Length: 316
Image (cartoon, rainbow, N blue to C red; front, side, top):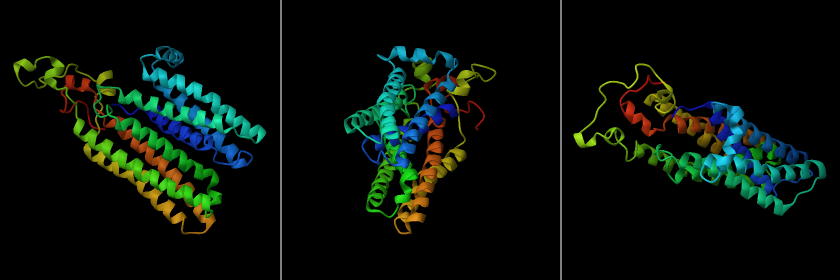
């Protein structure tokens, strides 16, 4: 699949925003303190920017409102409806903190649950697609939820890293280290599924309906030039680039944040807080690489009409 930057930004930024909002909605951070107020604003901005960037991938962004009408059958519509609904409790909680220095735990729990439901709906947009076997697995929503939770927890450090060295900060660091390990373990399980999925149960024989005649292979391309399907659905990435980007994503998103967080527990509070912020930036950079590969390595079944595993378009 073609890795559209707008969709990558949408999934990474909104996921991080919902993760940060979840942490705040559970009552972490004093609502009267300035860092908490800035954290609420950042969470809402990340969510809003992520959602707005998703409309850039639409052929007619001005018609995005129509996506809300199919909520009974479409995960895209459900995600849109939940995103709008979730803004209500989150905005109220942010206003309570910014304007009144107060917090409501019940409303926080409601907002936190809605955050996770929204991220789940986003993940199911992809996990529900049987035509993309790499995505059609229970590991996809698990990966999205865990990355949102981990990135949100890491963003929390960006605002409260000044408290590095305190007992509460140490607890958060150890908790985040656990989140990192679990998240990337689940991501590894997703990668195992994706590498074995291929085109799933589909084949060139089933795609063309000519399986009863024997093995089918491409004699000539259906089109002399590239078209929408070859650009968007039959996108290919060279193996050497895929391996290099996978390594970069793992280093930025897993190894470096883990090492920096461990070191932050051993150094002076000021340096520890700085390292926690750097670890957060590294994780988000790694997430952009991971999400790019999530789309770039996916194989839509329509690619079978263009030769399947044969070279469809020049490797990027």
